Image (cartoon, rainbow, N blue to C red; front, top):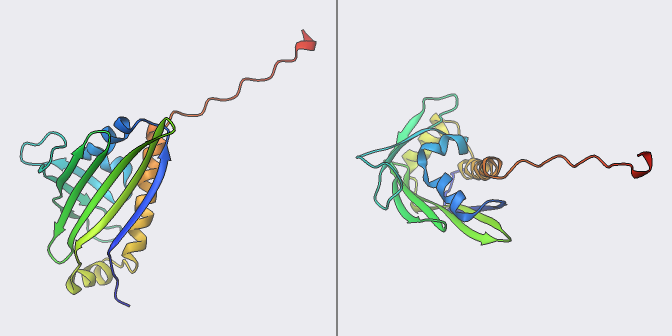
Length: 172
């Protein structure tokens, strides 16, 4: 069966401000702390932080195969609201990755999504499925997005404080 990659979205509420979430996800050098699929990210061309048009090098985990790199370009930078970047690779099409941040109940609803703007070519699918063994790329991406949002929550949400032990007023 030939794979397809079109679009998908996952979302999660985190108990952190939209600005705190934005600051974490827009610092692409922190991406390996968030995504199970990324080994490293570094800004390129003198960029030191997020700005529309800034380019960075991302190295993806090949798991049992060699890692591979790509050079995404920041597409949207709206502090506290949205961060998006576009990744184009030979044979692997163009994918727009987006994080939308919605203030909700004192925290943030994060929507992470991707949109295949240019489809993966048959050669790209051969590389993804045949050489890298990824038979369900859309499913793998969804699992990765869910893991990323869970990690964001883990980093930004304060740890639960243990409940105070009950005092027995009659014992005193």
